[in-house]
Length: 167
Length: 167
DNA sequence: GACAAGAATTTCGATATCGAAACATCTAGA
DNA sequence: TCTAGATGTTTCGATATCGAAATTCTTGTC
Image 1 (cartoon, rainbow over the protein chains, first blue to last red):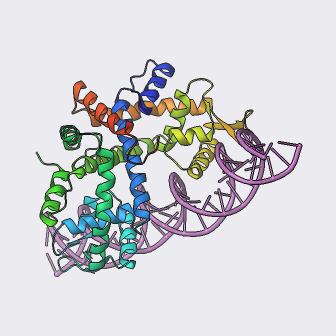
Image 2 (image 1 turned 135 degrees about the vertical axis):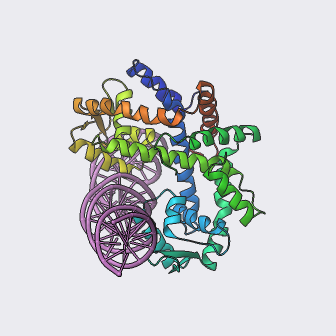
Image 3 (image 1 turned 180 degrees about the vertical axis):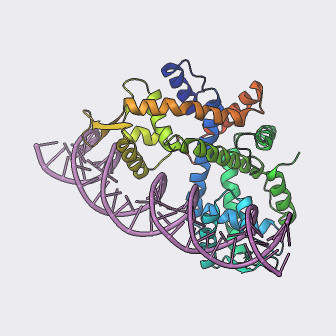
């Protein structure tokens, strides 16, 4: 059964037969699926008063384990975000009372971002929805299919090419 | 060999052992890979004077085949974008001379977006880079792996759950 | 054929992100 | 010690996106 990407590939084959667009068979599906999941995630989170990016940040602090504290730079590396956007995201979360900035005793240029009790509560309240949305998209795959998919994506992530970065 | 997501999963297992975060093994990798590819794509396109979203739009018109003309609504359905963002994207591309808005003879509420010769040239100039970036990320997979990956993603895309949409 | 409901596009206001530059601090080497 | 360059964070200006509302036109129904 053809999906939207099959139709796109057929269009390319007709409009530009000389061009090998086969990489799109994988990548376009990856993009489209990612966007669909993110849209649905945003919809679910709107009811919660949290955005997905804010959830990501709280989750990154939480899973770091007590005392749930990381520097902005560590957060920038964990989440794919510019340092400027990180500053603003932290501003919002601090204004909401979900994180606190404290002085960094090791480096006075820096700062430590700490998850507050309210931040932890907000995170745990949204975590169920987060996993639910993912699960609903994964539903058509059995355990073996999920493992296969995770393995293939991991192979691509581990390869240093592409952008040469360690993201 | 563990990747970043393996580390995240291990952190979750330690910080919240009661929560089943296994959907993240697939989804977090999908998100991260998508973001990495998009960042690299943006970097390559910057040198070209085109943005990825603008490329997507031109490509959608081009592969529709002559006369390379679609309505904004058709473009909104083909690309995952709000109608407001589509209006602005079309404004930019029209200002750059890459598309033209013409009256729609079938529906006077609507409009037809036509790819210009300059738009086609810009598209074809960027297409090689677009495919190169994808190929560089797919490099670690052989033909069978790519087919497997495309198939698994297609299975998820075809499933009507998740957001119930036909995106 | 008039009118209500729906659809296509645009406008509007808000905001999250980006790259570049500014600023403060740290580190390594002479 | 002093200095030059690197690093962590924030500020700045620009802009792409969003949801909601406004506008214009079409369609189906009585």
